[in-house]
Length: 331
Ligand code: TRP
Image (cartoon, rainbow, N blue to C red; front, side, top):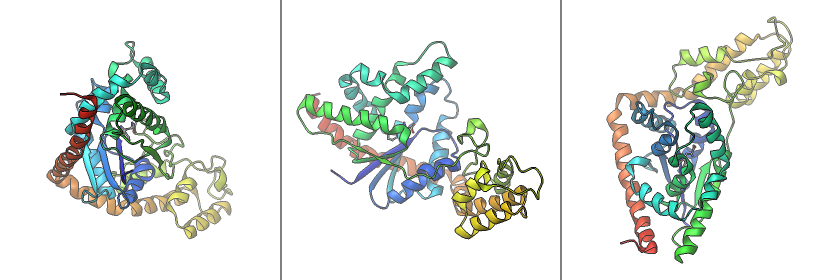
């Protein structure tokens, strides 16, 4: 087993602080311990958005810009874009041949996506979308990663990857692939300001790239204790739906104690609480945002990082592919 991790994200454009707290911050720590590969899954975006590609390239750049601002370090991690490592597609071909149809059809994540796609458009799903987990297996097995840091929603995909790896090895009688393990993100979950799952389509998110003003405006919309009408009503932090939860993520022990006391004795109103909270959140992201500005002003640096990371990734990928071709006895 090697000491390699790999993970990726679809290019959804500018990332929000939920991505930061739930995924990226974890990657930033892991890159110090593991040989790390992080990539933008732009081909995966095509599985559902093949007809909405106007912003695809910029979305990939935005994602990488957020990663770099958040502390992913190209000196420590190989950062690349899936479509710039075409070896992925070749491996996907071999894997697609050996993957039984019912393995992809029973994929639980796919079932959810299928439902959404079906509701939206009558045509049903594409051949490519059905192959989503096989393409993902190709991403992972191309680097023979030992671990795949992901959220709980992706664990089923890593399971299929293990199954495919085992099947490949047994069909061709060579141990080309090791079986990757999911490495569950130790994530702090953060909801959107309305209490629902944070997401840009819900208009309840705070972007890593947002200005301090936009952040403050958003946090002022955060739901608090709904039973608290007047400023001097006694509040209940345990019934505060969003603001106090944010405090528990962003506040130091003494901040949390102070806020709790102010709220529950009716001496601090919700607006004041949220104003302080916004300052806290802005403080946490200040350095990241400054760094992001720098990269935004120097898009050529981001471009170089993507191109050289992808070159580097291709080298490792080609080594794996050579073994795969030998095993399959492809010319
Ligand atoms: N499916 C993942 C997601 O939606 C993205 C992804 C594609 C991925 N290929 C991967 C994650 C390989 C980890 C490893 O979040």
